[in-house]
Image 1 (cartoon, rainbow, N blue to C red):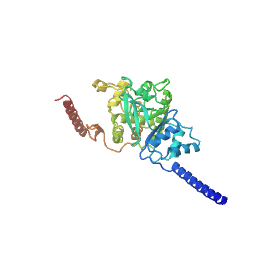
Image 2: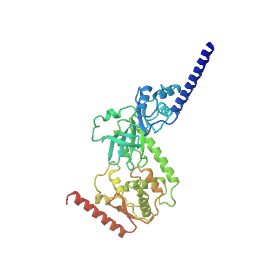
Image 3: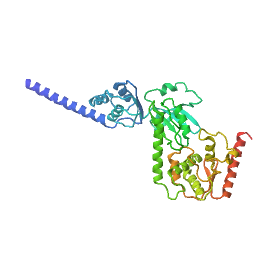
Image 4: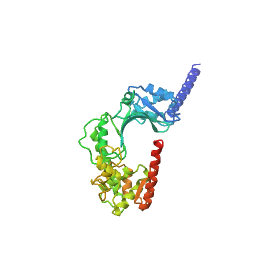
Length: 388
């Protein structure tokens, strides 16, 4: 009898051990295999959040199949108490182990809210935007002009959350003076700026910064990045360019940047100026004249006067031969590439075509016809706007 009891007990124990082993194996597979999440999601780990809070949210959003396995796996890996606050982009079918790695490794947030200070040609703006995990695109949620407006209601409370990423975006074609003025308006940054950097020496780009970041340090980074971009572009430049130094190429790039906002036109615009230089023709470009009037300190805000077009300044390319002495703005990478790799054309002229681009011409007669078309379009628009 006792022998049967012992035998049955051992059999049951073996069955339980086998079942337990199978359960453990299943749990391990659940922890490391792709999860049930169908679309990307943004997971916000708040300061002080517990692993239970996080696992419950993931379970509620069908990102993990079992919250208990998620917590147990984190404990087994000694990561249960290593949560780092922030906002994390969880990809579709992310594994539990992968999610644990994300939320315990720290680093910058990969989704959620961004505070962006945008330095533009015609002014600056501060905006909040949220990443849409499904599309990977940011959606603007609030904005204001820091020079003329106060933050909208609730803006500062959202912007001050510790997991909000902070970014300074510098638009192609802004001047060094505009960048310095913009950084001085960026209240989330600190430190003084010694001097306005040389025109053209700063790389337009989007820079992620920490709150309290030093303004001068960011300028130094912009300068270093632009120097690298220019050096790399100059090293692979086309043969027989009509300028001899990378600094002259940078000046040409700044003119290209100010003349067209159409990416596909940059190399074509470059070809016009290259052709004019090679033929000894004056560049005759309005943006350089405007720079001579404003010294890069803001926008002109009106058309050029005939007296300004005739006045001799180092930047009046209707008067001087060749390039002006310095860049007239900070060109982006694409404009620099266009300056050192211009298209091969016979064009010598261009004028706006009414669509945002330009009409190019090889002869003055063809150019005059394009100018006449442009003036007719302008008159038609003026008549429509005045109700005639």
